[in-house]
Image (cartoon, rainbow, N blue to C red; front, top):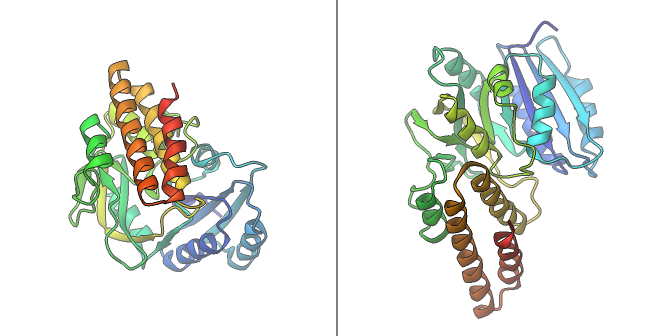
Length: 300
């Protein structure tokens, strides 16, 4: 196969069914471009590799190649994506979550919009939908302290304060890591994802650093993808803990000590409220989750 028009990188971890659904949706959607799919598997125990190998043999052709990298351990989202970025043969790279479904020819639409933007935007994301086809909030402003307060205490997502789902093209600070199209050269200039972030907040950090270099990000609602959400997470506790860890790390890396202290106070308060509500309603999930979150909030 000649140099592909697009390299699609998918990180999988014990997501056999949804990963196969994702790959099949890509295969159905690709009609006019040469494409490679790079699967980075983080030591799945559910026969993901075996099934993808079968799919690879069945679908390998001159327009599509499937590569599989099998890690011995779960390296996390950022580090696994960095592996894929290094292996990518195309200058155009689509970072796609394993729990996404490509609708119609969304990938080709996204790539066409990206190639026609005359370098106005260096990162572009499609319109994400929930499983019932309702809009999924998938972009927003960077996490300033007021934005974090709105997210933690004012249901900022619900009111569209902290993230939204525009129906028109919009220049935004960040887009969901579930679907990011960019160039390999841009990612290399940024040294890829910060591998100290295991999962969640990785794309926020990446696009924040991109913003500091003058790179711009676009939400393009003309390409639709279903995003199931938290496909690799075991329950709701893990994402909450990782978001707490991610926010702490992000602020320590990019903001002042005073801002870090204010963030810590907010995270502790959020955790305490969760614990109190858990005790009031005898909800073990809330108690255990926010006890762990409180411990994370205390960490330096």
